[in-house]
Structure formats: C-alpha cells, structure tokens
Image 1 (cartoon, rainbow, N blue to C red):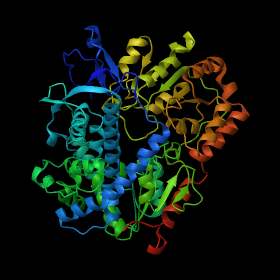
Image 2: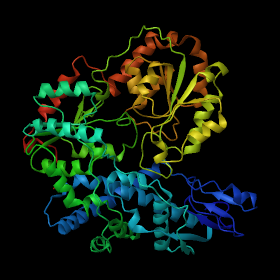
Image 3: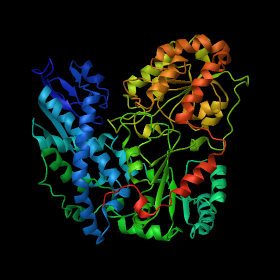
Image 4: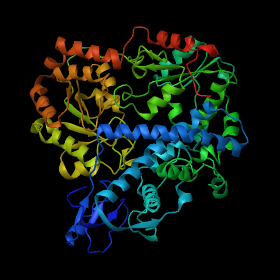
Length: 603
C-alpha cells in the first residue's frame, strides 16, 4: 500500500478525456494520460501512478501469459475450424493466429494488473467510463492491432471493461467524447497508375516462380544480393504486392456465436476468453474466406519444398495463412533475422520466440545456441553485398547524427527500447545539453520514421528545448545521413549500429539500462564495447566522451584495440563472410528435410 492510500482519488485511465470538476484529487493511471496541468491551475490535485514492475514481476507475468495462452489456443482453433467448416491442425493456426493471441493476452494481463494494483493501493471514489463503439475497434489485421493498442480509445474500452468486470470501485457511464478517437493506419495500398503498373510487372515476373521448389520473398537482403541468391537457387525472388483491403464489416452475430468456454479458468482467464470474440482480427474471422481466395489469385507455387522470408511474416496475414497451409503439407520454413534487437534483449521478444517456433531453420546474424539445431548462425542479411568502409579513410564529414527510436504511448510487448516517452527524450536532451557548443551546432536529430503512429511526436520536445538544433524530416534516406556524418549516435538496441559499424562509420551506442534489457548473450560483448568507449549507459557521460574525441575521432576509432573489439562484437551480431550467399544457399537447401528430421511441433 502507498503512503497516500487513505486519500480519496478520482481515477483517469487514459488520455483523450477531460477532467471532471470534482473536489477529489485526480489519479492518473500512468504517463500515457494527457497533461492535465489545467487541473493543477484550478487547485485540483493531480497524482500519477508510476508503478513499474520489477524484472522478476515481468517474468511472472510472462509465465502467466504463456499458461493462459496455451490453454486458450486449442479452444480458439477449434472454434475457428467450426465457424469456417475446416479441419486445420493446431500447427496450421500457429502460423497465423497464435502470435496475435499471445500479444493480446500479454496486453490484457498488463491492463488488468494495473487496474487491480491502483484499486488495492488507493481509495478510488470513482471513474468515468465512456461508451465506446466496440465494433469500430475490431482490427482488420494483426498489424492494425499493433496500432490500436497504443490508442487512447482502444485502451479506454479495455480499461473500462476491466473496471466493470472487477467491480472494485464505483464508476459512471458517459457518452464517448469527440476527443476520444482513433484513426486506423490502413495496410499500405494504392491505385495510382505507377503502383498498378509495378504490380502488373511483378505479377508477370512472379509467374516464373510458380513451379519453383524454393520460394523466397522479402529476405531482408539488398535487392541485388537477393537477385544473385535467386540465380544460385535457380529461381527468382517473389515480389509480394500489398494485401488488398477487404471491405467486409465486423459481424456481431458471428462473433457472438464464438464459444470460448468462458467458464474455464480463474477470473482473469475468463475475462480474456470473453473478450477474444470482440478483438480477434477480421483476417481470421470475417475475412478468412476472402483471404483464401486472394491467396489463390496470387501466382504462388503449389508445392514448394522450402519457403524463405525475413520480413513478410511480420506484415501479411494472407502470407501467414498460406505459409501455414504449405508447412502442414510438408514445406520447410526458413526465417531470417530481420532486426538487431533479436538475440540482444532479455527476455526475447514474442516475435522472435514465435519465429523460432515456426521455423525449421532460423538464420541469425552470427549468434546461436549450440543445443538448438534450428539456429543457423550466418551473415548479417542486411549488410550482405554492401561494401564495408575502410578503417583508414579520413572522413571529411562534420555532422553529428543522433538517431532516435520509437516510443510507445501505452505499455507494449518488450522491444529494443521500451522507456517512457518523456524520460527517453530527456535522456537524449541530457546528451545534447552536455555537448560542447560547437559540437551542438553540427548535431542533427533523426526521428524514427512513423513514430507518431505509436506515440505523441518527439519533435515538439526538441523544438521547445533546443530551438537551434537541426531536425531531419524523417524522409531523408538514412544512409545518406550516415555518409555525411562524422559520428553516428544510436539511442536504442536495434539495427542502425550493425549497419554503420559494418560501413566503418564511427558509432556510439547509448542505452538506458532500465529500459534496454541486454540479454546474457549480449552483455559480455557490450561490456567490451563499453571499455573502448563505443557503448555508454549514461547519456550525459556519452556527451563528455564525444567532446573528448570530437577534434580527432580517427585517433580513437582506428585504435587497434577498438577495431578488435568491434570485430569481435560484429562476429556475433553482424557477421561478415567472404561468401555470404553461399552460406545462405547452403542453409536454405539443407532445410529441405524429411518429416522425421524436422524439429518437434505441436499437433
């Protein structure tokens, strides 16, 4: 219990809502709530609940989520089969709906725990639940769900349902205000002439892959390297044009007919089971049959012996439905690592764990696990075919490039940088403030492209606090910015430093240990980078280090001990090979396994 647990509070769960005119102090559930400074000006006391789970508590929540997901998954699959009059195995559904289910359960458990925590820690006099139009908040695709869970409206709906379910404190019902809204980010599609022409050419090219035994698409290889790999495999890379948007509307009667056995489990599990029919993406329900037809309309091979991708499984429900069909009929699946986060964070992201589960071969960028034959340490796909820079080249650039990451408005599944927006921006601000004036003048801040889809824009912070700082629009090809930079500073676990170090561009990695949890595998390598000044766990100390090397960065960067530590780091997380495509080809070919050789799968 908190020290102020006897004080009565009115609870605000999300942003996008106005404060009530009450005498009771206001309790904000978290930093995602809007800035309510006007309430303080009117002598209304505002408190924010900043409770954060410890690593041990986060581990317990993940174990709980795994247990609940594993119990629910077979029941959900059985209902989908019944509704679609199909007989797909659990393994088929693993490729499509399972990852959404795991992410959904993770999110609901987090929201449930937060309401339960404030109810037991504060005296809540009430809260206002706005009536949200639930049918407007059903995602069409798994990707759309990722945008929804960072919106005020979706979270207000879920928090309201949890409050009503728990019944721990009073609440009132009110109409949905105009300020509480969400704008869907639709899956990319376009009907302009250029797009239609390109898709037509792609369809013609894709006809050549229809009889191929090896099918590969969106491998994360540069285009030229991808084409060369195709020639080595006797085929061409498939070009997947964006999934067509299906115009179906959510079917309330169909969703009401889903039997998720809501009497099973404890209170939390019963709530999750009850909520699934209102949230499962339309890809797997209303649009399932249309998706099957759209898959048939593509020139896809009927019986590929191996399917290789690094990106498409993260963006297309249609592809995953097709992949599930082929994998259950004997096709082997190769998935390539598609970001620097994989292998570096702890616990591993849900996406990484799911990829490893559905893969017959998982191509990493150098790291592996000797006890797991699914892992295939190989070259960093994103750098394959990209010439590395030269260690002795005198760089004439004068710019200091500071690369930002995306933050998330509401608590999300663990990624490379899960810090709160303001604390993250203030950390970056500490770096800028501590730079020498001349260095500060040549600094350029590069925002994460599309970051505002997940959180409020980062730009106002820099415009207000550093009006003289240069800010990139986010549309400039980032490779152009690397090449014109004397030093690149990355501020999260990710891919940027894997690319810049490969190009021999002087690079600093600056992370907040509280929000960037390095894995046991990665920690020794980062400790080595810390000893040579490449890695910093303090933004202000990183600025002081930049000041100390700025006049002669090459003297530091080209030091043999620095280069040796960088080579050791890259060998594990951004490996370079003299014949990278041969390694990839070998792993793809060797993955054509007989069924008894494939790793265990749930049936």
